[in-house]
Image 1: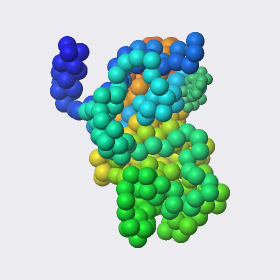
Image 2: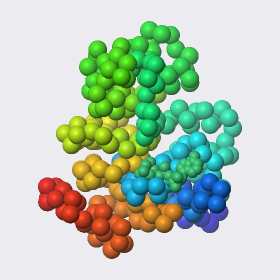
Image 3: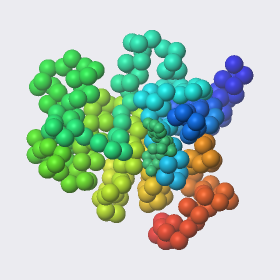
Image 4: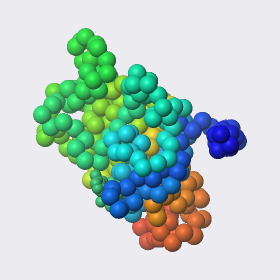
Length: 269
Ligand SMILES: Nc1ncnc2c1ncn2[C@@H]1O[C@H](COP(=O)(O)OP(=O)(O)OP(=O)(O)O)[C@@H](O)[C@H]1O
Ligand SMILES: [Mg+2]
């Protein structure tokens, strides 16, 4: 109760609603504790960049928040509701307000782009095919793909087009919050920068909140409003890029003030 009051005060002080709030989350596999009493907030309308060394648990955290992995303890509040405590009906309503782009297997290979985008529509809504086709067309346009992409299979697309198509599927139900696991990995720097611009545009025009796991320093400097760093089984630091640059935690320091980062800092002024 006291914690809840403190959380509320913190949110009000910050002037922003926390759309995802994770408290004391512990997740493990057998003896391997991956996340230990982790705390994290994602604020409405922001792009939160989530970083951390490989294997620290970034994907595990995302999957746990999405209830694809079980937690040992802790609470996860998403869009104001505690998943564990809501009815099945409310849970479905909550799931519909979340979009996801997974790190691996972003699209179903046996389905066209249009059919992929329609998967969540079929799962949650009962719409006539014509309307679903129109909605898919709009999503394809929204993510900057050509209309012809609709009838193509993933194997016929470039890496960048696959990421855009997967984003279109994540946006199929007009979510409030999207989870993107390394959306620009494997893209060339120009393709990655264009994808970042698209994400920023969606935040600005749709008021989308974005939780983005990334190793891409360019993304962190150019589009992320805040950054959270995972290490030692918890969020080590959370803040703006300026906070990261001022942070003396050894991993954060070498990541944000290493050779590659310095070149980007120069570029971004
Ligand atoms: N289903 C699972 N069963 C057992 N262990 C798992 C499972 N999924 C992940 N792990 C372990 O959890 C740890 C964190 O993995 P995770 O995939 O979250 O790392 P990550 O931070 O996303 O790394 P990367 O940057 O390489 O994607 C690893 O030690 C991994 O082996
Ligand atoms: Mg991962």
